[in-house]
Length: 380
Picture 1 (cartoon, one colour):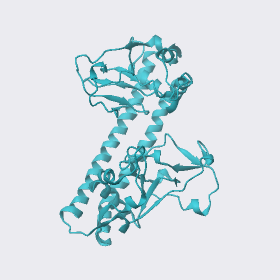
Picture 2 (cartoon, helix red, strand yellow):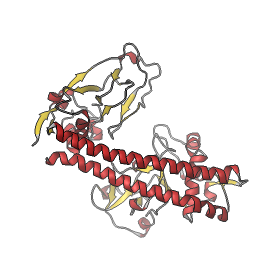
Picture 3 (tube, one colour):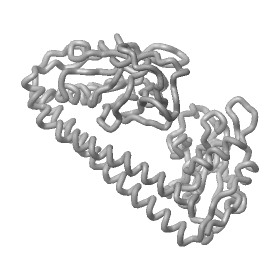
Picture 4 (cartoon, helix red, strand yellow):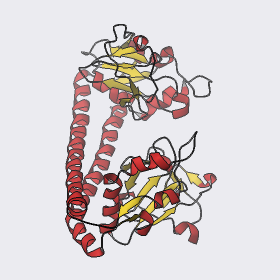
């Protein structure tokens, strides 16, 4: 049977400062509730006032909850200490015999926790939340044995995901090794431009009033294109009429899509797989399309081996928001092998990428199972 407790009854606030400069590893927290290297410029900053993050300590960023509709919070699990902004809240469990730290982190991943935080934000532009308001949030706390069962189930799924991700990393390395062997070590090929190898087109400027969160066809926007994968936490669907012009924006499996705006322009590009479809291409996302899977995969690996990211940093434009144009993408230098060589290349790498695709599909399903495990807490 569930027992609801306020968060303030479960945890205590921690405020240990980096006075001895024990660490210079500054971390931030993503909206996916994971620690990440801080994007803040800390050159010349006095790090002695930053807060020291130790094993099994939580940290949260209370400043942007109203804007992001999430509380960025995560549990630090490393032995080596790191530091976080002085504006962050840090806290620990009062008694691990009553509430497991890993279980509390699962509670923080629930949608209703974020909704509760959002409801309590202040009236500022970004919407911050106070420590007192966070402490007032009530959470369902089952007995410790049930907590452990839920944590074990969640960790088992997480472990399976990591195994699949590691397999894909090795398959990717194998494909790149084949590429290097065929097109760098053993080949004397003509160097041309990307426009000589494939077509480049951008999506349709969909009317925002025709977007829906639940009904319609998935639409790929810039924020959905991340580094080597598509992300759907900000998914929008097009619910308007499918005209001839819009129908041309349906993506195909193995299309390469590139986000054209933002601070990570040049890094955010990915392959489209069958489980993503049907999918419409929106404005400010470029699609690279050739005539065969072999060519698509050759081009995809070329973007990595020939350092597309570095190329973009040299040619991108914009000051406040960086962006790259379709013509700049078309000018990217690529090798131009003949169709016979590409067909041989495809025979070697297509099975690798098909296995990667299947693993990604399984990972996506496992991510859904993780959410089901978390949602079960509400029904106990």
